[in-house]
Amino acid sequence: MSVPNSPYLSDSGFSEALTDDPRKCQIVGCYKRHAYARAPKGLKVYSDFCTKHTCGRVYPEQSQYYCIFPRVANSAYCSHHRTCGQEGCEEQGEPLTLDLSDFKPFYCRKHRCAVLGCQEPPKAGDRERRCELHAVRCRVQGCSRSAYTHDDGRVDHYCLLHYGTQRCLYRDCTRQTLGSSFSFCHVHNPPNGSNDQDKDSNPCSLRGCNKSAEPNAHACSIHLCSVRGCPKPTVIYAPSSSDPPNTIATPYPPLCSSHICLDCDKPRNSATINAEYCSAHECGLVACRSRALDKGGHCSRHACSVMGCLRAKQGALSSSFLTVDRERERCEVHARVGSGVEGIGSGRIRASSFGAVNAGTGGFVRRYGGSGADDEALRVRMQRNRFSDDLERLYRSER
Image (tube, rainbow, N blue to C red; front, side, top):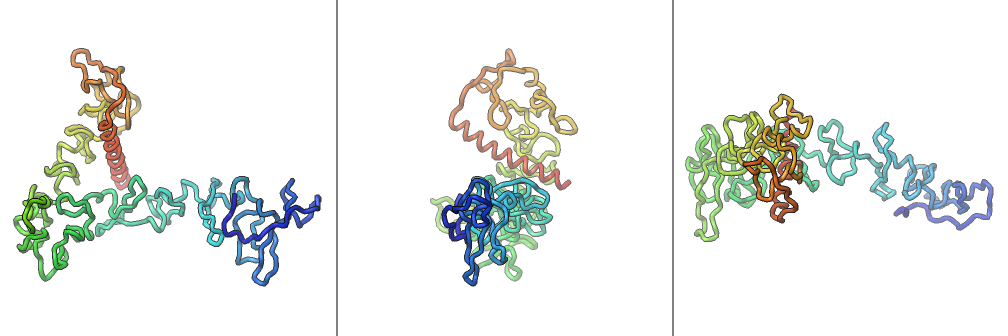
């Protein structure tokens, strides 16, 4: 393996000496002469090994210059410099940075930043094991949680708890707001630089509305969230392309982003503390705030493993929520079926080719294959399941 920017200029071919001549590579069976580098005053500094066997780790500031250990086969470094940089860890790997002027030690999977592709060590004390660069904090004022990391490694502006709640309130706009104190993005922010932080002038934050906001609120009486005491403006529909310019969108429904279900226009379930979904889209298990896989059903953690079933699995009904066997992954009805089903995706089971249980026999007809639409729906569902599980782990870790 070649090492870029190597300070070792050359070896001088094969040595004629076949004994322990210090001028030749000290690897048994290698008869090439040792490599050398030019010192600042033009003097040669020699390695104990040839260019092929010299470790890529060098010390240009020190008189020794070269590493005293030979390179590992098929690697640019010796075993010492391939060892994890965490003290006491013996895991080995190849440092990704081969620029010898700026050597960075290898860190194993357990001791490197949790962000995909990052090889830096985590910041001391960071609960989510992120490095200095990726230890981004949620932008919501007063929140100290780490920003949410997407599947592709991107770090969001907000934490897992606040992810999706700090978007521009202009209907169908997916941009982030200008900050936690703003309601709109840079495109839909009210004109003349006015926003939620204005003290002298406090207009309604709905773009195009010239009315004054209600006292201690961010919107006028027409566009204010209908939840008593909430100062935020309602989620609004953007004017269609056929509407005249500067048309004020009709506010529907009369709920802000904090009180509207994340899946529909209905209010969030008031019976659940810190709910994010309405009663139809929230998991049917008491006190669970996760999204139901199917409307009126349960989340990925508590749903029966038979796809389309709205009942909770038997394991979810215990106090521990833990499953100990296959039957506990299904509801009481499907646990008795016991055969004729096919597993797919994230552990859920697709029923018969007709999509339903045979009411007369309680059996299933085996289904092989599915449409592209089914595969795409399953992929989206699995992504949502992953987000739901991450959120559940966050709640449990903070209890």
